[in-house]
Length: 543
Figure (cartoon, one colour):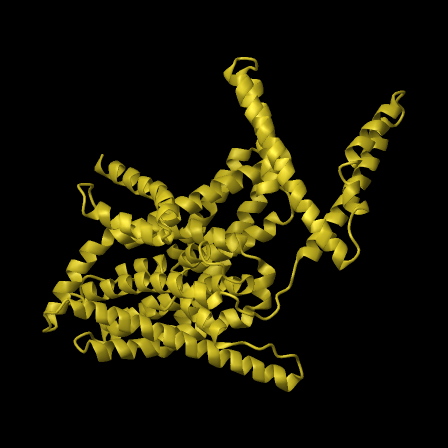
């Protein structure tokens, strides 16, 4: 019963956090962390956060959804930048921050310092999304950050695994590290792709023979990330990469358009709810763990011969600053090298100022991956003695998460304000062309279907009249599209005004339907159907 009460309390905190964030104007993650800390100090039973359970419950669905929804063309276009950040920067950070931590805290063994540096090196897609929901980050920069966060988890956690192994065994093999990393990465990707493709093909085979059940389709999409994660972990591969690969594969499979429209609409709503709840619970849990983590870290500092708790703050700030500085250096050098190569090839070189580099550096926030990773540190060595500085490492990692969120939320808005960025591809023209082609395809299908239905019938004129009425919804797209810039601007304003008028009309319709139902002038079933139709129309203009 206590577990049920705790779960309901955590979900209630997520619900309340949205309203509190809007009222206080604070970033949503901060409010959720604060509510978690209040829960920890209340009479509600605290949560024992098992890292394995945490990984299994929260990360597979969230990473799967990120891989599913991130634009694949952007990943391919910026693949070099993303790989440089996800692999090269992680190794650079592990070496630099590991040495710094050992220098700051000499009682912490060098291998443990490297393990902590590896844990705090990956950025987190969940935390990045939380910051982006409040701070307007340029689209291309956001795609790079999301791609980096999806891929650098594996490299960071692998580095942590080898550092922990060095602590336990006192030995390290570079060759073994390379082989293990290759197995983790390649195996995880293959499992994610293979499982998702296999399940999707089996689902399609069954659907073609017995029809599609919407609820079953949604449930299958929810089970795929957990299946990919568990299978990958069973074979000692990267469950995180398996889940990301499964999400990317899912997007390609769904691109065939096999699912019913009602399935896609309901599935999107279910996944949006899961994303909101899981993201919120992660940050509430972080806040709920903080008091216990802090008390353990204070005791750990005392064992080093220091009695001043303020040293914990000093350590956290020093590590956070080092992470930002190393990231700034890496991004700056990487951009300079790319510009140098572009100049040698004679390609145009856009100007990139320090503000953009600083924004890229500060946007690398840490989150759930870091928290879960540091909690996987073993409690004891092989001889039974306690793992060196475990509580201190947990606190430092949790502190880095909070500081990175605070700094990004405060510093990014002024850095990005009125920032001149390299030109991005504008996809409005592509959208207009796609709408035109879709309208032409629709009109052709209407004409073809009308001829098939009316062939040999005496009431063929009725089918012709019906087809004309349906085609009237598509012809304005083809006949009314402006051909110049001034016409395009006028058309955009006209569309915006028309959208507002349609929304006002639909809301008036819905209010009248509710009034008729309240006064029993319309039965419940008919009212529900009419309201659902109006709701679907409104989402077209507000979604």
